[in-house]
Length: 319
Ligand SMILES: [Zn+2]
Image 1 (tube, protein in one colour):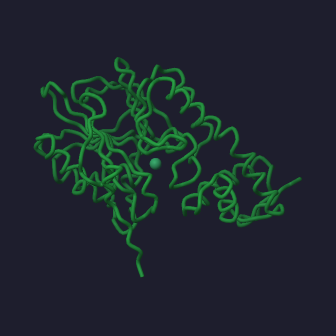
Image 2 (cartoon, protein in one colour):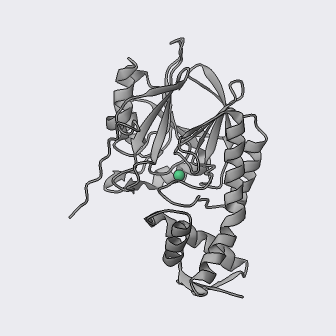
Image 3 (cartoon, protein in one colour):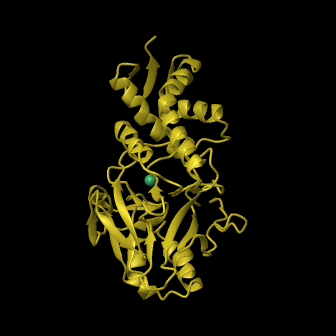
């Protein structure tokens, strides 16, 4: 029997369709990650940018999961008195199912354009799914490149290429306001959903961290609440510094933690068994389906470095 996951959460303002103005002209919309992920304290934040002077057209950063056009974006536009046809653009921070999942529905409902970094465009063209909700293959209307400056809802944003989590992850930087939309690119210790931070390309992730360290940021708008933080919006600047330092420390330590967990398992274990051990050590009651997959990537890297042995299924210590 299918379990029922409550999607709407009034206390956390998740999946209510209510937009909250976080800074002048910047509205946060929260969508639930259920029923695919049963972690109500983790959501995806979409950022609706509306010109407070009302002169320039509104834009949204990320479209959420396939249902999000109906569940959160159209209700938020209604709340703000914005006609759907006024929404000009959705900028995808990257191509994952909880960020670009409603591009097609949103384009259909509003006529907006879809913009994404060129290195994440192939993912849109392949299509994917969010649980039972399909994400059909589709193309972007504009491919973004690093260093471009975009005019969005009355302000200038620099496109900062910050790969690692995905090849075409971007940040949008408002230098004047010291504000940075970061998507999933930099993850502190990971979400409560996945239990650990996820990066396809570790070296790219570190280089992206270096780029953020070099910028003055007072408001970092992540796409999820990344632990140990409990909100997607991280501020002031000292908290942003702590967020970046925690993100770096996670990857400095995760290999050692994985090796410790492997030793504690008697020197031989599968990625799923190690994921259970790591999650328990990190204080999570249950292990998510994502964790073992992410960990498999990290163990594969350790195997390449000759630090663990593997037959492709189990991993074993070499000491
Ligand atoms: Zn992602």
